[in-house]
Every structure is written in C-alpha cells, then in structure tokens.
Amino acid sequence: MCGIVGYVGNRQAQDIIVEGLRKLEYRGYDSAGVATLLDGRTHVRRAVGKLSNLANLLKETPLVGTTGVGHTRWATHGRPSEENAHPHTADGVTVVHNGIIENHLALRDELRKAGRVFKSETDTEIFAHLVALESARGLSLADAVRAAAARVHGAFALVVMREDSPGVLVGVKVASPLVVGIGDDEAFLASDVPAILAHTRRVIFLEEGDMAVITPQKVTLTTLRGEPVDRPVRVIDWTPVMAEKGGHKHFMHKEIFEQPRAVADTLRGRVGREEGQVFLDGVKVEELKSIKRVVVLACGTSWHAGLVGKALIEQFAHVPVDVELASEFRYREPIVEPGTLALAISQSGETADTLAALKEARNLGARVMAICNVLGSAIAREAEKDLGVLYTHAGPEIGVASTKAFVTQIVALHLMALGMGRARGHLDAQAVRTELQALSRLPKLMESVLDDDAQIAAIARTMLGTRDTLFLGRGMCFPIALEGALKLKEISYIHAEGYAAGEMKHGPIALIEHDLPVICLVTQGNGYDKMLGNIQEVRARGGRVIAIATDGDKQIGSLAQDVIYIPQCPRFLEPALAALPCQLLAYHVADGRGTDVDQPRNLAKSVTVE
Ligand code: M6R
Image: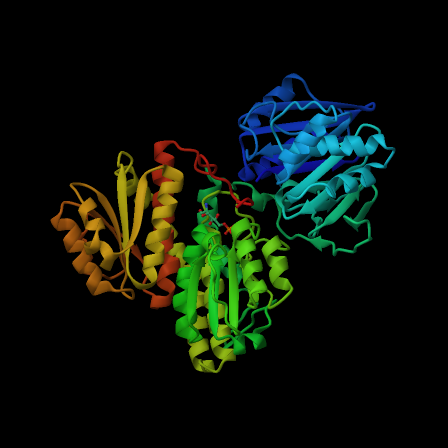
C-alpha cells in the first residue's frame, strides 16, 4: 500500500515526482524517496517519515535528471527506516514497488547463495537484484524486467529504470494499481491519477499482467509474456484543483462539503423522473431480473453502506440481501446458489479483501457487479467482465476517512434498488418517480445540514476530553451509528461503539456512566418512538445525549443536552442526511485534539494487502 510516481521527459524529474507523491501520501507515509538518472549514474535521496522530510532533504541536496522514480511507503516487509525506504537499487537497476512479493524469502535465500548482498529488509530489493542479473545476461530493460517478473509472485506494481537506459521506464502491474500518463514529449507512471493530473489528463489504466515501456515520445504496452496489448486512453475530467484542499483546513472537511455536488454527480444522467425510469449506465439491468439473492461484499465504511443498501434493495426490489465482511467471506465455505449476485462495494476498487471475495464468489458461480468510485480499478474491471459497475462519481477522495464515498455509495445503492425493483416489476413507474423526486432533492437537503457546521464544531469542543462514546440508531440509522463510531475512532482515536439501540439493554448499557457522550440518531422515520425510550434510559444513567433529530421535533429538545437537526425527508433519505453530522462531529473532535485528520495513524487509504 504505497504510492509510486515515474517520469520521463525533458523537464527536471525531481519536483514533478515529489508533487506527484504528495497526491499519493494517502497511500502510505512512513518514508519516501526519489531517484534520478544523470550521465549514466543513479542518484537517490530517501527520508524516513512524511514526504516533507524528503522535500527538505531535496532542498539541501537536489537531484538533477529528466528520468526518475519516486515512492511513498507504507511498510509491509521491513520496518520504516531509510534503508527500507524505496527506491531500491542493485548494479544500476532502480526499483519502486507497491504490493508484496510473496516468495521473497526463498528468492532472497537463493540470491544470497549466488553472492548477492542486500542493503534492506524489503521484498522489493529482491526484484532489483533479479533485474540486475537478467541485465547482466545482455537483456534489454524490458526483457530483463519481464524475466524477473516471471520469477516472483504476489501483488505488485513496479516501476524500473536502468543506468544504461536513460529516458526509459518500465512499469508492471499485477494486482496493484498502476496508470500511465501521456503528456507532450513526456510520460508518467503512477499508482493513481491525482499524482499526474497537474501534467496530463490522458491516462491508460494498466490491466492485470500488463507491462508498459514509456519514453517521452512513446508508450508501448504488452503482456508480461511480451504479446502486444491495446488499452484505451481515457480522458480524466477531474481538474487538479478538485484534488486539492480548496480552502479547507483538511481534505476530509473539504470532502464532507463536496457531498451535495458528489451526490448530484451520482444522480446525473440516471434519473428519468417524468417516465419513472432509472438509468443504471454500465450495468446489465435486464440480467438483474433473474437474481434471487444479493450478497454484498465490502469492508469498513463500504460495508456500512452495504447495510443501508440491504434495506433499500429488500424494500424496493424485494430481493433478500446478505451483507458480508469481505475479509471473512472467503475463509469459510460460503453457500452461493444459482441466481446469486455478488455486489462488491468499494471506494478505491483496490481493497484486496473485497477483490478476493468477489473473485471467490464468481468462482462459486455468482454473477458479479460492483459499486466503485475509481474508474478502471481492479474491482471495477472484475465486475466489468460480468454485470458491470455502477460508478459513484464522487471524485477523488484523499482523506483516509471515507465521507463522500460513503454517501454516494448509499445513493448508488438507492438507484440500484429502484432500477432492480422496476426491472423486476416490483415497482411501478409512479413509485419510482416518487422516489427519484425525493432523491433529486437530496443535494439541497444536504447543504442545509452542512450549514450547521459551526454548531457541530461547538458540540465537538465539549467532547475533546472524552475517553469513550456510544452511537445508537435503529433501522436504517443503525448502520449510520456504526459509521459514526468508525469515523470518530479512526481520526480522533477516541474509543467509540456503534449499536442498534434495541441491543443496548443486552450489554452496552453497562458502559453508561456520568457524562458519557451518547450520540442518538433519533430521526422521524427510523424507530423514533423506541429511540425516545432509549434516550430516557441513557439519561437515567447519567449519559450525555447528543441527538441527531428531524427538524420540527418538539420533544427532543427537552430530552437531549444537544440537538443537531436534519431536514424533514422520506425515511429512505435519512441515512444519507444523518451521516453528515456524524462526519462533522468526528472531524471537529479530531481537529480539536490535534490529530492528523487526513492521515490518521496506522491507516492507509486503500488497503491493497489482505
Ligand atoms: O476503498 P474501499 O471502500 O474498499 O475501502 C474499504 C475500507 O478500507 C474503508 O472504508 C475504511 O474503512 C476507511 N478508512 C473508512 O473511513
């Protein structure tokens, strides 16, 4: 789970690479490094810690050269240290790598016996040695990389340069993402599009087993076996500014505020309101007619979206839904009967557990489909082979804590449920029209919740010293309680539990003590009366109730210490709206505690290892 950038062209590589790495820091940030070629020699700078350390080092001792590679690391093999930071070199070969070489121990042993000396504990350095050995046999850089790649297995996106090949980089993609950027007399390789967006919008998403040889004028694509392949050049419409903070203190805050726009983008072109039609572009809707059961496969926040999706699909399409943690699914013997749809939900489209679970489901006979944010990602490509992908179109999400991806996933699930319900004849045009009219109002309703930012920040200030919190909800707001708790703990490091409020009496009620903040999702459409009872129980034990309630609620003000109101809306819209105050609360608590909101400790944006 690292970030890679490679550059060949006429400009100095160092700054382009460092800027690119800055956009990839979300992929990992325990060390970073850059290498360039100059006059047939490799020059490397590496630094432990955040990218700013490397940037400072480069200010003192800059690198010259128009061919270069860079890397920001999230350690898997070998502790975070300068020796283990990438790039790794061997005999004039330089490698940056994202992923894991699974047979590295056996190869290390073999290479040691052959007299090779290692400078790091990483699996990556092995690849540099393998390429060096193949190069010594007189192979071109591309052939040497191809031969080395045949010796390793695991997950890897690699970019390789060699001292005798200035102006050439070779990239390989196996189970980790790698994109090629095509500029004017320059070319790029990167783990993700934002890294190169300032320079080009023309990109090629490499597919499994692809190898790219890039020079300033030419991009050559082959398989790892050397057969030519043709991949489409896609034009990315994200502006570089969209990937910047846009005046907010943190990406997370910016992304929370982008949600009305993101939801509008999710809905764009998919709503035929007059005719009561839903257009699920990219999905073979007709084939959803024969689906008998849906199995959602997802992790973390995307799993919470799946729980909301269960209620939506069961309600509107009348198909039973199971929501599985992808990391658990394939380690038992799941029953996949004919007519099962495996629906992967993933922001990044690269989550290793979700991808593996989806492949397992397909092997067991399920039809597969995905809801993804990242175009051309591994999960999206897997689903494109079958029923297709419903893209959320949320734009790049940089903050590690998922926000706009979550809400757009819920909206995409809502559309899918309506499309499926209509296709199966469970909903008539009028029912779909009514739902779509409501959904179309969602962006505006969201804006009114975001207007409460200052009030929510003030409530957050009262929670800065707290050690534990509870989030309670019912019905479709139960997954929002789970999500609220996850948001708070991952960025503020405060212990938080999400519970179905009716479960409180079966255990968690023991946790309630004087002044424990309990965030209660007490909206009109999801178990309102029962929630009032739960709130009384919390109050009776001294808990401090922060309610998320519906505008116009006359009772809640006298029961809760603080109330955040969401606008009146149909009950199926409540989860998307109630998520926003939870996100803002978590954000302001974390910011108030001075944590690294966008890059919380121990976490990475996309988890590409199991
Ligand atoms: O990219 P994905 O949606 O597949 O990622 C799944 C989880 O890793 C992700 O949602 C994670 O839980 C986030 N840190 C939540 O904010």
